[in-house]
Amino acid sequence: MPTPAVRLLSPSDDAHLSSSLAALHAVCIDNDDMVATFLPPLKNDKLLTYWKEMIADASAGRRLIAILLDESEPGTAAKGDELKGVVMLLMPRVETAKHQGHIQKLMVSVECRREKGGTALMRFIEREAVNRGRKLMLLSVEARSLGARLFPRLGYVRCGRVPGFHMSPSGNLVDHVLFYKQFV
Image 1 (spheres, one colour):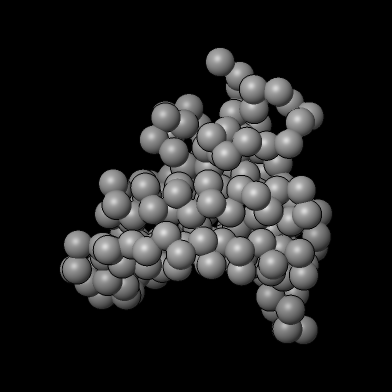
Image 2: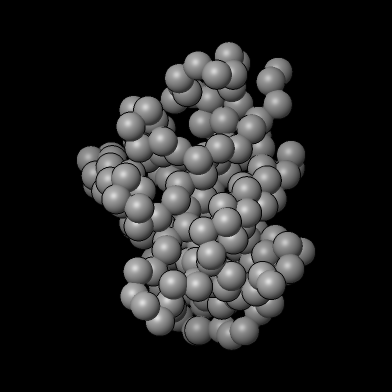
């Protein structure tokens, strides 16, 4: 089995992965009860539109999308079933926030979670952010999520908790915790 590798999604070369990104997104909501923009019952067209918009944002330079691929043939066009994870970095354009990067939608397939897929995606997106002058990473995540345990291990500092911040897929209001990490 190939070793998963992380790289930036290319809006021109990887647009065909939008349906695979939508499928991963749906699995994380349906199977993990993950708070991730949409509530069940999920509609594939909504998820697909969302990911097409995210790819358009990446094309416009407003965000980066890093993907974790289990490539059977490295150097060839990515196949949808090779997608194992994703994370996004929103890069604020306002003058007072050009040093910030907002981490969004860290999602990893079940088979790559114990293989450090989330850690690999985060380390990669952090390097890309710093290379673009983003020295302060910000994120919020559901308090009971796997990410809430992962981010402190990656050096993120918890700086707050917001009760009832989002509605979960099961219909309950859930708390979110806020994290930041500074790079010198």
